[in-house]
Length: 344
Ligand SMILES: Nc1ncnc2c1ncn2[C@@H]1O[C@H](COP(=O)(O)OP(=O)(O)O)[C@@H](O)[C@H]1O
Ligand SMILES: [Mg+2]
Image 1: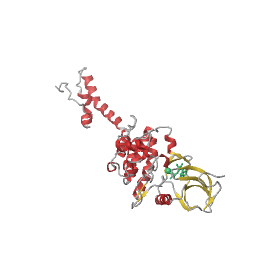
Image 2: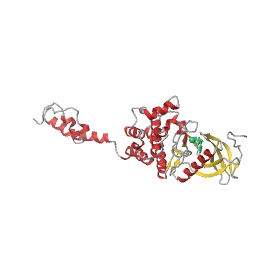
Image 3: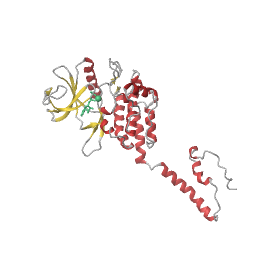
Image 4: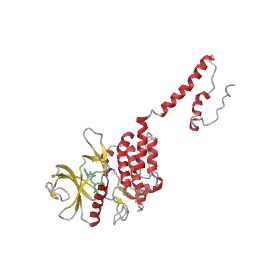
């Protein structure tokens, strides 16, 4: 049987990889499920649709970038080979799961789940940035939601096909020679839209778009066509997050979506630190508001006793806010109270 992409089911590549079925396709490649007959394990085989030299270089670059990384959220690379027609192919760890885009099609997810899903991706990008690699194409289709029996599902990062590897000498543009754009413009950073050089902050932008999309159910910049999206992401503010989005995460999204890359968190590791800072207090310490109420109760108790002893003598209203005085200006009433001085 002929599978699309000219690889036949049952064909054996490099004397060991037996092709089984088509797994998915992206802008430039087909990905097949296959079996490594030497090690008797499933693998994924990525083959270019065309053998153009630029595309061949793209696949080799992807193999080199992924091979440099040993992060658990990065899909592992096993081998690099060549078909008889000259097209190169790469052999990847097979991931049982589905692209994140399918989960996002169902709408927003709770904040804790968004942070659980995104933290390893930010960590993987942090690792890539440390190795001088910028992914440049972070988007839901390049993240696979892996399902493992007995374990929480997790995201795995793939497709370093247009990654920039330092020292940067390659084409940095996200536009092809006919003017069309690589990948999904919703996740493109303003500097990419303007044809400027990508930096780790370019991936940070995409992390911000992803976090926004997970929390809101839609990306922060949408439009009916590519020019409208590119205009919005370079010129306008992102659409607001839902009112109930946690403030810390909303601030992180806003920082990641700064138009000026220099104002964003510096790299994936910086984003991971902020995601972890949000996740940690929920389990480590009791909420601050609870402590605050305890203070108010403790401070109000003597007042209540005094009130009872004083035969109902009315207490001035400053008792109500006195505990807040020591904890800073934010808790003080805006206008000076006009009640009488006390004790008289
Ligand atoms: N290792 C893998 N395991 C399972 N499915 C994969 C794997 N790699 C890719 N795929 C599937 O193939 C699709 C296209 O792969 P991708 O590497 O993004 O190709 P492209 O470079 O053409 O965008 C992915 O969205 C995913 O559905
Ligand atoms: Mg892809």
